[in-house]
Length: 145
Image (cartoon, rainbow, N blue to C red):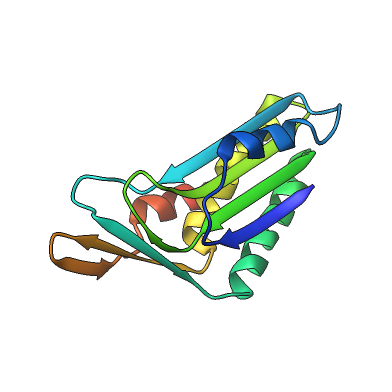
């Protein structure tokens, strides 16, 4: 099961993890990451994407992870639209026979997704909206792979 979805709707991270766990009796590990909108100064975040291109980019990352590690299934879900603090943005879930492959592949996918997938983020703070620039720390993490 190799699932990539870009959607406005929220997702149920627990249900997605359960789905990965049940994909095969060979699954011995499921590792997932859920990214949320930070609160504090941020009042809302709007995520935009390039339909079609974004999905292809995410699918290419999943294919690269499949080549690098022994994986049973992968699910990547990324939301778009206007989101509020505490709302879920992204789910990356990886199922494998062994935890080392699942952990490595999950970390690889989120690190590379942050720098390579065509998403644009606009943060709204008190009276100000600004596009979020790429962060050197994200670029550095992605270069590890």
